Image (cartoon, rainbow, N blue to C red):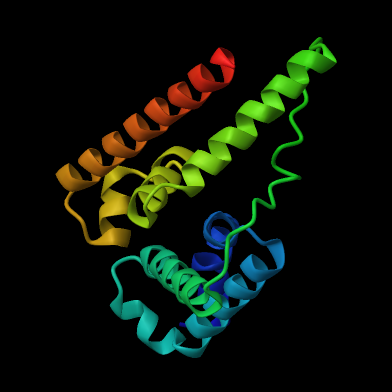
Length: 172
C-alpha cells in the first residue's frame, strides 16, 4: 500500500477511531496518543494491509485493544472528561431546562461508562458511529444475532438504570 492508498483508506476513519478511543479512555490527550499509535502501526505494516478484507475493521479493533491495554496498565478510575460534549445548547430553552439537559446528558455518559466493555463498544459503533451490523460483525468477530442481543441488552440496561436514577432523584 503506497502513501496515496493509505490516505484514501485510513485517513477518512480517523474521526471514528478518535471518538472510539475517547469513549474508552475519557481523556482527549490519551485518545490522541492512541490514534497516533494506531496510525503508526498501520503505516508500519502497510505492506500487509491488502490482505485484510476491511482495513477499517482492523483499525477499530486495534484502537479498542490499545485502549483496553492502556486502561489495564493505568488501572485507574476513569474520569468523565465530557465537558466539551456536555455543552448542551438549544434555542428558546430556559436556563433551568438547559441545566436539566446537561444533567441528563451527564447521567447518560455515566451510565454508558458503567456498561461492560463489549456492550459499550457495540452501542457506540451502532448508535454513535452508525456502523451496520455487518461492519460490527467484521470488527468484533461476533455473529449478527449475538450483536443484536448485546445491543438490546445494553439499551435495556441504560433505560432501566436511567429510569431508576430519575425515579430515585424525584422521590427525594
